[in-house]
Amino acid sequence: MATEGAEAVPIISIVIWLIIIGLVMWLVYNYIPMAGSIRTILNAVVVIAVLVWVLRVSGMWSQLAPYGVPPLT
Image (cartoon, rainbow, N blue to C red):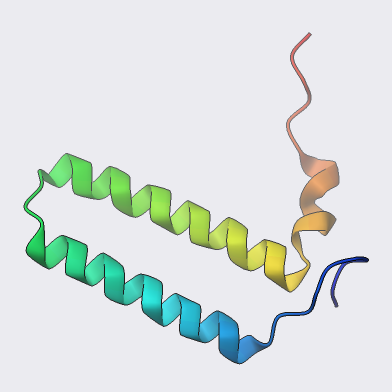
């Protein structure tokens, strides 16, 4: 169920992108030396970004919009 005005993304495309992201993360973890804390932060940022992306392309992001954080006044 795609949102109005949004183009539907085939599931195979989503799976291919997830595999590419996983491969890039594996390459970064294995070939770029970094501290454990930086690795943990990078992992959390990538997981959150991928989760938001999957929710948006699947059309579920608009269903979660009413549960957003209210603006600070």
